[in-house]
Image (cartoon, rainbow, N blue to C red; front, side, top):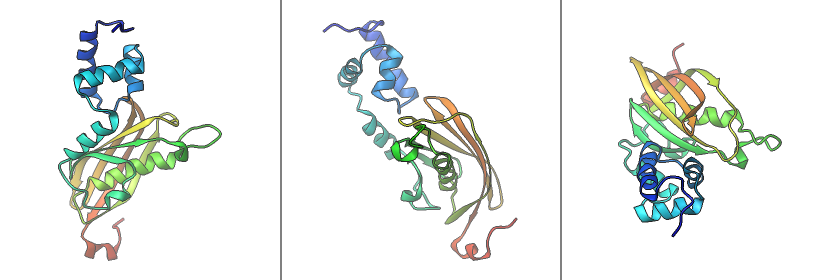
Length: 197
């Protein structure tokens, strides 16, 4: 079977394995562009190597997540959580679809990008209830329909019930959004007294 690959097949497949280890969320289309071969060639390579399609890879990474979400319902997180280590770090993926964009420009509405980051910052906190007290945000570049947002939250510091959580959102490794949240964790009984200013 002839291939239009510029690399010999063996080298391409070896690099394909490495690329997917670095970025398990790359689509066949992304890989096709990267290796300058047809999508069909990438699919055949994946089949030969026993690498599952994107949906299965995401599911497999998600099953390795260490901790369950505690501070809110899993269905309240915007995006799909694929890694969660409470009070440490978390990763979620959100594909921007038609319902997330302005119809005229096909650019994602900012509140979806913010909501993915904010819900991830809350989800990473090991508390019965976690609420955002403050947020410093920056939109780096517009996000378009069809792009896949990978948000990573890192708990930077903790002071009593308060945590500082940094979230970086990327598309194919390119930074598109950043935020630093001050999140307050509390028990259910404390929620009646509100946030301290």
